[in-house]
Amino acid sequence: MKKILLFLGALLINGMVSAQSFEFTLNKVLTVGCGSANPLTDMTKKVDVVIDGNKGKLTYASLNCKKTIEGINIGVVNQNTQGTAFFDEREKKGFIIEKNEKVILFNEKDEKYQVATVGHIDKKLAKGLNPEGEEANYGDFFKNIDKLIEAANKKAEEDKKISNTFHAPEGNYTDKYGISGKYYLSEVSEIIVYGSRNGDVKYADEVQLELDKNEAVLKIHYGQNELDKAYFLTQDQIKGFKDGSLSKIYRLRNDHNNHLDAFKGCDMRILEEGVWLIERHSSFTNRLDCTEPTFQNKNDGYYIIMGKNKERVMELAGDFEKMKVLAEKSVIADCEQLNAMEAARKPMPEPGMTDAKLNAEITAAVRAKATTAGWPQTVVYTYIKSSEWNTIRNKNTGIITGRSLRAIAVLKTTAGKCQWEEVSIAQDYDGVNYGKSYFNGNTAIIVPVDCTAAMKYMK
Image (cartoon, rainbow, N blue to C red; front, side, top):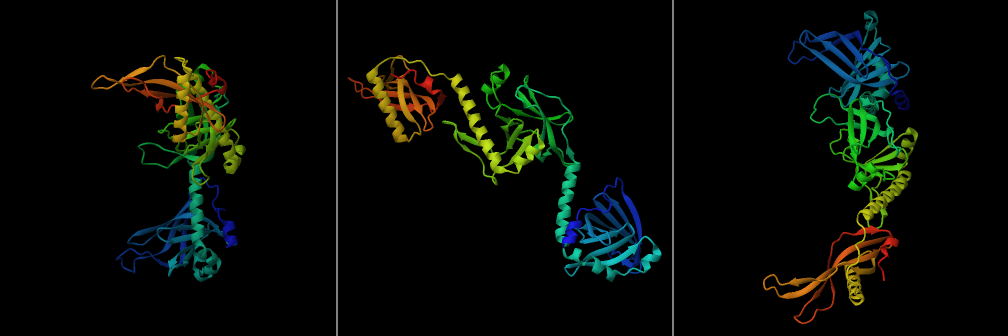
């Protein structure tokens, strides 16, 4: 068994660039099996074999019909005889070629494989061949044929994938972020051709990245005149990229219509300079304060590592925990960058009316709501945004029923990060007096803010 496995893949015709053809004379007549044919004419003593790369085809014919055995190359299955086996899984038949001189036909009978007949390219030598003697040479092979076929099929698929794999086209792309350039993939990616039903599947194991400032996209070149695209996630990022204020790019999102399957709708996340993680199930963090990064478990996610250094790519692809540590740092940095952009776009509103007593009521009301609702943040203080009260009237009678205003609640997370949120405060009216202030709703739009800036209206 061990010898057979060692011989697997050492092909007799390895390196051959064109098909080879042979004619063998069998040691005895072979029944072709042409349905209702006359048994006297349904026989042959000749077989033709064509070896073409990883496949072999044996043809035998009578006056009535022609049949073939089309087999996948299993490899050298006996080192002493140098016999290379070809097997047809559909027909459960195969043949072995020894040194391009001898052929052994075998098939399944009574749930085991055995020699059917033998032949030679020399007619005289063919007469002296003994089929029974070949059983001893190939008995181990017949016992382990299922495992060898599985391995041969796997290798054939890998070889086919390699032969149909595109390499990165030539390019000389650069950018100030150091993203553009040639990248290696940790595993080949299928190229999906929409609308096509014919032809072999194509793959890519390298790409050229081009960060295009004019279009604000990342172009992923995988073949000559063939490319996919990845985009920024927010308008803030696009603006910062175009005006040069964006300091670093942490994440991009691939187009759902991309042809490279690995890049189809996936997020691209930077792990370190020149190395990116492509993930189908996006990792994320707690957006309240950019803590608690969440990453898919090793067996739950879809990951490909892409990098400029092939050794580093394979290192991270083979070490999930090391890759996860880098990914979680990137997740946090990405979150903090997005929060900073949002804070710059949404500065805290200026205070409106000033009323210390009213503001104390508002703070108490918001804190009470935060407690009952289980807000994860602490309410640090509040201030009034509105310059005056908004009168509330009954829609039918026009009678005053209360009044409301807008206030800003400044919050702090357990990690010490600050945010603000706009809330509504109301007071009911009984016809004579306005009642106590109470929480009347919030926008649920929580805006991050630097803690120093957050405290500027605190009194």
